[in-house]
Length: 101
Image 1 (cartoon, rainbow, N blue to C red):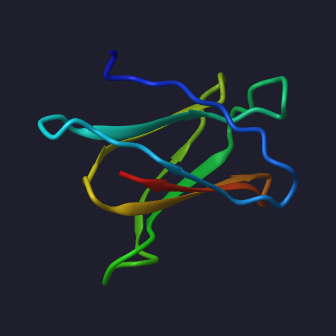
Image 2 (image 1 turned 180 degrees about the vertical axis):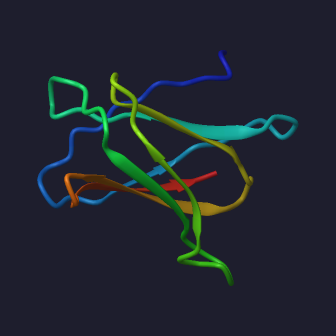
């Protein structure tokens, strides 16, 4: 089994998605994603990663802009934590995703 897994989501407008990603105990984990309009990649989208639980809930962990292929990455992420990724394009939130590591 590979240490990497690919998964895609196509939520309905306004839908919130929850997913769980498990890492091997001795390996760091990260989040890699690709933002599209359903067909074409969206370069220049703004992706914010927040802590979603514990005493630091709501704290901004990191922020990136997608590349020309709509891709972004965060890491390493702390095991046993819940994160919230919010994706914006032209000042409008287009996606929100909870990630449990």
